[in-house]
Length: 61
Image 1: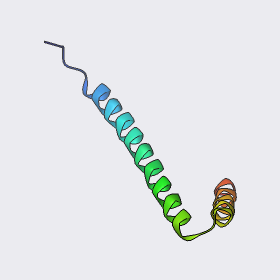
Image 2 (image 1 turned 30 degrees about the horizontal axis):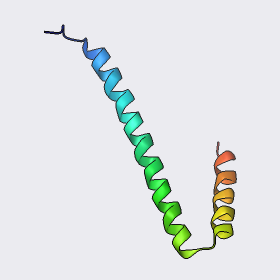
Image 3 (image 1 turned 180 degrees about the vertical axis):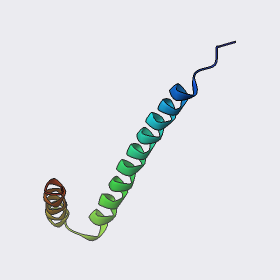
Image 4 (image 1 turned 90 degrees about the horizontal axis):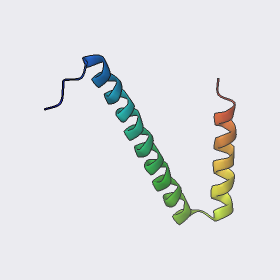
């Protein structure tokens, strides 16, 4: 039988795992969005849109 972990440790592990899950889910969602764009737009249009979005993200405060 393993000793019980302190609640603080469990909370830290839960936060870390939640953040990792949300990161993976966000990346998967983004990949789906890009795939959908690729079915309706030309590759260069998709690249241009994504470049514009990246530029806007970089300028956020």
